[in-house]
Length: 369
Figure 1 (cartoon, rainbow, N blue to C red):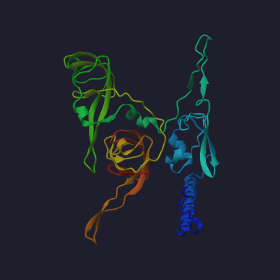
Figure 2: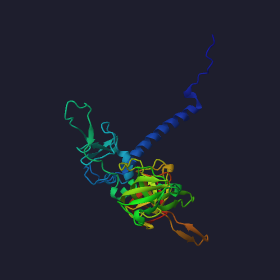
Figure 3: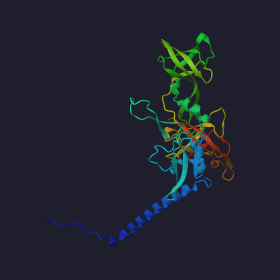
Figure 4: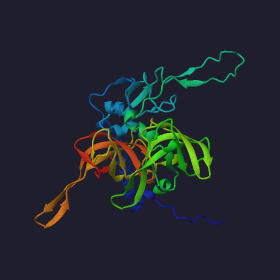
């Protein structure tokens, strides 16, 4: 029989053992300190005048409610205590009660559903119906931000690759050679449109180019109206316009309506990764940016940006002359506001300016909050 020849090491007498042990103890202590620091940081951002209990009312938004509790509303997901009886605590309804509690020294929010957020049993009406129970909420969840400011950008405007618009069917004329077209009018489109399908009439908007890399990021497809294809002869289609936001013009493009879920119940959050971009456009035909303006930033899904992400806005530093070194330098950027992303595309995003501390402008920077 062979004896086990593996040498036995007395760990206590091994010179490196004490060092490893000290390192392990130090690592555990550091992790504990880090955890304690995280809790301390979260308490640090809790508002001193926060309510202990808040009842949600119509007109509230998640941003408003988060601002009642936190100095930094984008920390909203960090203070929610998951209730196994509630699928998504971020879906909040009028009548719900939000309570602040402490768990292991950490401030956390818990949710008590009101009548609007509960599910109710629908009366079957007869014993012969299926015994399956149907549940429906009595009211819609409150939005994350004010929908009146962003509604057109959620359901109408969009950003597409420039080639999509260049190759899309286009309006050539209205019925009876009319040049001014609106809801209730028939118009003729050069291109193939499947009969009985709905289409958006859009207008070529700004071409978005990255100010640093000069990469073409997309083109705005500005919504003009909604119509339905009613006939096709060769390569000329006839459309009936059912709704228009403004007059249809010769040359406007026709795109299929988007098939996507419109969601306004995303919640404030910090980006998962580093974001470093710029405001490259503001809607309204102006160059200055103010509170509740909708802007376009040059970061999108490609960079990991998602709806609900909150970004800090930095006023780009001015150019100054260094007379000692005899050169021109750029002064440091200064934090000047916050914005929230509410719709993303591959390379760009729409965002709403939530607060400003000083006048802002196109090409101001956006970074992690």
